[in-house]
Length: 113
Image (tube, rainbow, N blue to C red; front, side, top):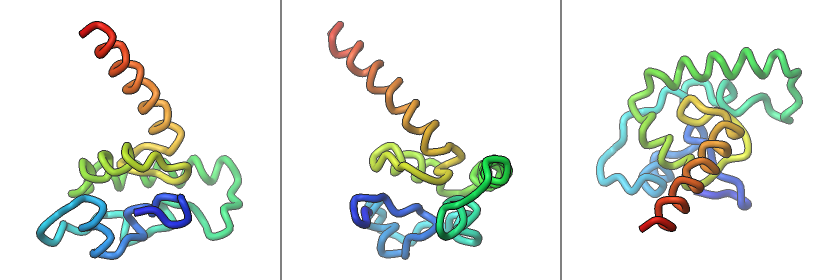
């Protein structure tokens, strides 16, 4: 689900948006991030000192580690390529680096085949 070309973090999605994003026929289990969206997306206004952001992201990673929809969230994040927040236990920057690595692997694989 994109809003103004910006992906919606799972913590901010409605159940209808969840179903559309992950093409789930039944009610998905609740994501742990829905209980504290700002933990995963940061404070309103986006101004946050680096040390506070790092501490918040560490706690968000811990929450993601036990989330029942972490795998779905990770697949979704790889599709939408977020620019902010913690998604499936990874920051947007970490997801971007992972995407680059995966793209390189796929290009390398397809060039060999």
